[in-house]
Length: 115
Length: 109
Image (cartoon, rainbow over all chains, first blue to last red; front, side, top):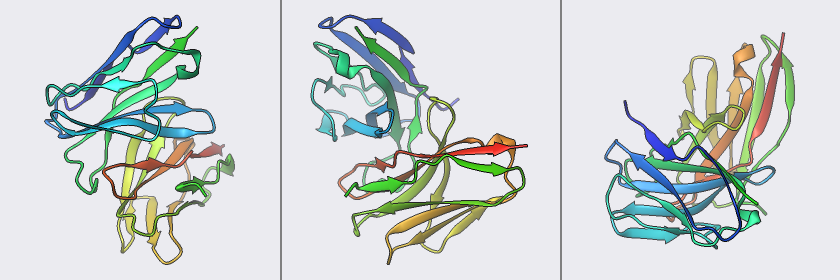
């Protein structure tokens, strides 16, 4: 089954404790992206990747890091999480990023709470 | 001005009604357009892409008005199961997709 898999689905942690949210897709997609969703602000892009070893900042990259060492994986790293990063996070992928004329497939989401 | 704007609603309609949502975008060079459906804090799922000539999928019709820079979604014969939040998404170029904040639809018996 074609899918985007995120882990964990839920996480409660404390300020400053490094964490990683994993994202993996099995569709051989080139383009992958991370979003956060907050009430009243909608989905905002954090980082995206056009292909292996090619990443770029989205609209809200502060406090986050990503890497793309393999085509299927695109982890989101919070080096020193803070309460304002409490949010619902989605990973998404699409076949290519050029022109983005193809829709994105989303993972189930990760609900992150930073205390 | 936001890149993509939607009326947050909620739109409360009875079953069987026809309802329409609009979504405006600010970048005239925007290249591709989509409507997604999102159920209560679950992942967005593609409802339909929006093509220049307009397109239809069953009870759903999507249209693009480049002159006025908006896309629309029309839902005919609303079902209870159509209750959800509808997100528009626009590619303004630059390998990114910008989402609206969503329009909430509530269909009642």
